[in-house]
Structures are given as structure tokens and as C-alpha cells.
Length: 441
Ligand code: URA
Image (cartoon, rainbow, N blue to C red; front, side, top):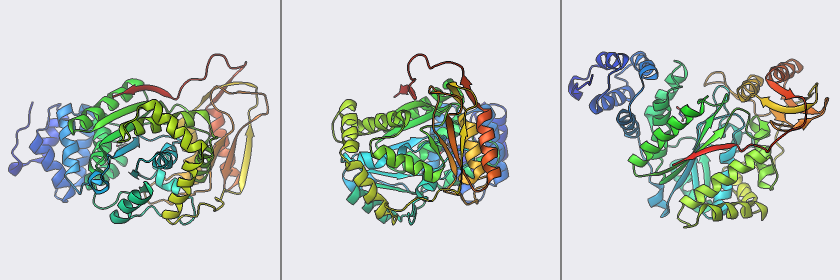
């Protein structure tokens, strides 16, 4: 069934029924829905019903592309490539637990001579947000006017801020509505949400980190592949280059989960230390981004330059300059919560599971995340793992430190994480597995 209602006679109830019954929405209808919703003519309750129908019935590729374009058209678009006279690269993650990749990547790529100006989001539920993490640094501002944002990218090569200007207002409204109507988990809706922001931001080449596992929106690898291919199709259709890394989010990325703790881990990485899984993902993403930039180098050379930028200290210097440029104090001691509960494993063996969703939820309950959009986050709380999947521990070795505001909160977080941590008797066998499960382009 095809809806061919002309724009002038747009009927939202008919559109909802069509999708409910498994039909497709034509271009004019999709445009009218998005335009009407942003203008306040189509109410939340009708859009909610349509979103739920989409969750069940899906959107085909042309519908998803049209939705993405209608969302882009709902607001301003940026053209940083023209402003900077450069080919613009960008990176986006679908969200996970302990994912601080962008924070390390931005100064590394900038130190290699490629500008990275990123608009990031806040955490919600069990997933952390880049802006919240940056705000653990005293003084740091994530609110940059468009002019300041572009100027900072021009002069320093790096800026991360909240969405500036009137970029994709349709996504702001739709995302907030999806969040409270159980309609986030839909491949076409996620693809349109992410890609509308990337297209409006003016990136020529985009590296997407699609997370899969308990701590991600995509729980199964087939869903992650579908989302990846959908986003590649949208990007390619709009003349952009898109590379996807499908990465493991069955366990937290790195060892730190919680805002200030994650900033500390980024600083560790910029000192050429830090956990292997995080290093692998940061350097692979950096190599890919540099190879897609106007430096005209291949990925192996990109990775070599990224590693060199870290080992030489250039990336850390750029980090300090970046933090100062956004009014933060790069020398400030980050506050950590007063209760620091060290939690050992009872039995020795090899860790075969630390469930990402459980760690993310435990950190959020400690105050690191929000339960509703208006909550304040507590930057000082979180969970620091001392070992991860594949590591062998003796009985009594520390598994984690919980940073909390009260003993009760610390005990509850520890119990929750222990409940979903599996230690299998015996030493580790086989090789460490890669955090990068697949690539697609
Ligand atoms: N991230 C986004 O920006 N949008 C989604 O829908 C999901 C994750």
C-alpha cells in the first residue's frame, strides 16, 4: 500500500494507519510530518503513535533516506569545509559504557594536522555523554557560539561542544519523544537521527562506531550490521564517505566508567598508557580518520602518525590547549567522590564476563548519569575496574573501586556488578580478543 496524499491534504491519522498496517509513506507525507511537527502543528501524541508503528513496521531504504533529508531540512546546516578550506572528517559512536574515544581522538587527530570539530551529546540512561565528561573539568564550557566554535577549530584544530545553532531541531524533538515513549530502539530511526546530524554538520567523511552488546542499543551483531549498512547507504546517497567499525559493547570500554574517572583515563592514554581495548579503538579510529582526510595518506601511515603524536607528547599538549580554549583548567585536580570502596573477587580465575549494561546502570544510579533529562549529573562518582574480561585474578585481588557519596550506594553498585561478573576457574587461554569485531564501508 502506498500513501499518495498530496502535501496540501496531509492527513496525519491516515499516515499513522498506513504505517500501522505495513504500508509505506511517500516523500511528501514524510516531509509534511517533519515540517508539521517542528512547527508545532502535529502533536506529540500523533508522532508517538507513528514512531511506535515505525518501531514495529520499519521504514524501507527510500523512506529512511527521505526522513533523514527532511530532518536535515528542519534547521540550519553548516559548511565548515568551505569556512576552513579543508576536507572535513567526523566521528560518531552509537553510545555505550565507558566510551571516551572521541575525547582522546580529537586532540590526537588535531595534533596530526587534521581539524576535528565535533558536536556531542549528553548521557541518558546507562550510557555516558561526552559533554558531561568534559564538564568534570573545572571551568570547561560546552556552550560555544557557532562563530567561536568555527574559529577554535580553525586556530587550534579541535573543539567539542553541544549542538550549536538550530541544527536538526527535528532530531532534538524526536529524540526526546522517543526517549519517553519506548521508541529509541529502531534501526531506521537511529540511522536517521545520527546521519541527519552528521550531514547537517557538513562532514565529508564519517567514521561511525556502531556498538553491539548488552551496553549498546544493538544487542546482536546482525542488528549492528543492518544499522551500519543503513547509515552507509544514507551517507553515500548524500555524497559522503562512511566507514563503520562494529565494536564490542558486551563489557565496558576501558576501565573507567563515570565522568571524572573517564577524563583521567583519557589523560592516561594521552600519556601513552591506558588499557589495550581503548588504545586499539582510539588508534584505529585515528588512523581511519587521517586516511579519510586531505593528508593523502593510508590508514597504516595514519595510525603511525597518531601513535607518534601520543608518544611525542604533541597530543597531550593539544589536549591542554583545547581544555584552556574552552575555559577549562587543564591542571585542576578532578574531584572524586569520598567513599572509595575497593571490591575484591572472592574466587580466583579468569574473568569471562563483566556485563556492560549492569556497570552502566550501576554508575548511573551512583549519580554519574541521568534518570530524566533535567537531572544534574555527579561528575565525581563511578566505577573503576582493575581488571577486565580475559584477565586472571587470584582470590582477594581487587576487581574494582566504586566511587560513591555513601556507603550504601557503594555497596549497592558493587553487589550489582558482582552479580553480573563471571570468574571462571583457571588461567586465561587463547589470545585477547579485539574490541573491533567488523568493519563495513
Ligand atoms: N544516538 C543518536 O544520536 N540517535 C539515536 O537515535 C541513537 C543514538
